[in-house]
Image 1 (cartoon, rainbow, N blue to C red):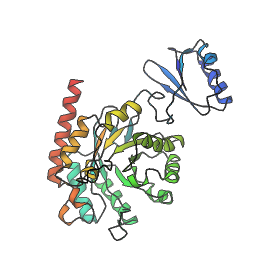
Image 2: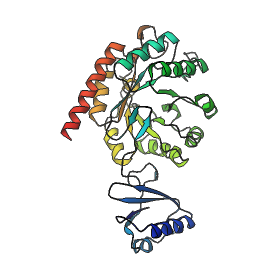
Image 3: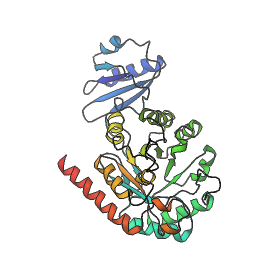
Image 4: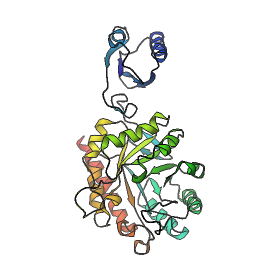
Length: 336
């Protein structure tokens, strides 16, 4: 249920309404916009008389919300959520570029890549210290040493860092990492999502291979319900009948999700395309669809990468792609 208030509601009446609603066992989440204030009611609202609330002087309208994701719902929070990480701004019409290797492999590899993506205008550096691959025999990352290298790259190049977490027990290791990433395989790892909800760190939540958009929003709801408002949704491609690519990038999910939720939505063209030749076009498609950011795998030497070299761009190709993404966003901004 949402309660839309009239302009400049009486503070005493508003406090009384919130206290009464809390007494009914309902949590109240106020959202103050430029011209309107909305109270989002989360909990069992079935016993609350809508007409009783609507009769109050400070109330403009009362509406029931059918969707099960309350905190993520744009009806509860009409304005876009904007997340600031260092100098980077994610959401609110900005196009944030996140770039770096799939996994941290060595100091030389990470530093060379970080220098290149910074020069090309990337806003954040990505790189997994722990790499839970599909095969137990594949490269599993450098672990704690990988985190140390990421923090060293952050200090040297000034880019906030993004790294994947796959178990709640790892949280103490990630205390200095700026953005935590939940991979597609962990989208419904509810123990992990609950733990992330108890932090304040921004979380990139990737859509699972075969999950619906509503299931993605419900996973985000776990984090939001825990008290962490800093969730970024990531469309990374879904499994379809076509085996040509690892995941079919659901470009339509970008505007659709942005109509359903106030959370930022980014795309991962590298995981979707699976091959470096497809990545620039998919990245441009995401930017043109209105994505709040693009996350691209870049490697200083893709031919010798220990992980996902085939889908990684060279620094030179990334620089050209990043420039084209900025041109696309500028064109869209001018037309809007």
